Image 1: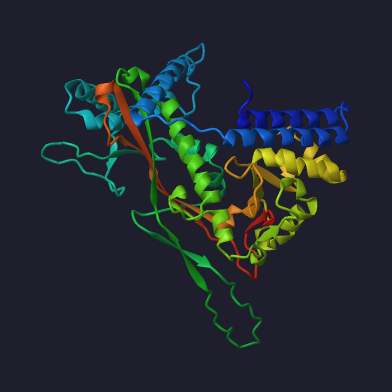
Image 2: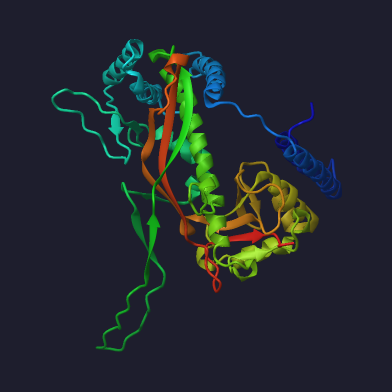
Length: 460
């Protein structure tokens, strides 16, 4: 069976990495590696075109959940046997087994809440709540607007709602989001209220004077703009077997904590980097969308450099150097980084650096650690950036996200019962929710570049 396009691209990346290592060990020349890159990218392009002609079959959501549940059930069994070492010490994703268990039980409590009308489900729900109570952990229930629901004082009953896992209760779940999310890890973080949150933005500097003796300085007022953060709720659905009990809580947290964190982080990256205001990106305008929104003519957007052609093979080192020259001095600090797809880094940046030789080639060959650099700036790989060339496409960013982009967060990660119930299928549907806002404001205008700069391919 031929490899998928993703597998072929991963093989290309691994082949280029080996080629770079061979150069340092004098087993290959730069010319040989450059020829290898050209050959591999041609093969990858053909694989992508072939895959685009194939139609994918769709399945109903319940069938999909059954398949997903069976697959995850196997993973849960494997995780249960690997979260502790031979001495019985916890070695999972979270800071402690207690934290993992609390997250797992909270997920169970939220997911089982919808089925309390069923005797068996109610018994499991009560057992989970009792286990949480024994840990001294009370579930924080919130309504659809993120406000805490207070139990009825006379009955002690709990209205339907979501169970919130906050950074104070379980810092590990937030760390997972930061670990997986490039946008979240690099953008300015801003806590939000239940509704829209306004943040001031300083658009000008104060005038500075050297007044004469006895003279008062002239008062100047800074120009303040306002940034609006509108929280939106990202939702993901999964399922697990109704047979799971308290003993599976740690494994459940390991698997579903990671699964939901990865899913939310990936979609934050999609919206943060590629959002164009459409429903595909939940109405968010991300960096590339905000850059394109500056002007209909790409040549008028001062934060963008138009490449030498519309194909990646036509981009030049001078194009990337121009992007570096476009980044304003005030944004050119340790937080300024390249953001690019891993495949494009290896097939475009590496190729250009090797062809240029000298310091550029030396820099690109030093790939022993985790950090990649290009033209003196760290490179952050983000797989949401485009990997295939297209007309008028922003393929690389050199940006200071701390200065030009915001991620608003509301609370932590919520877990709730699904609106659709699958108890009769032996499944417990889990709905995860994360309330976020994205604002990419540092795109400059048609006069000045901002802290979010990029390289865009030509229109044709």
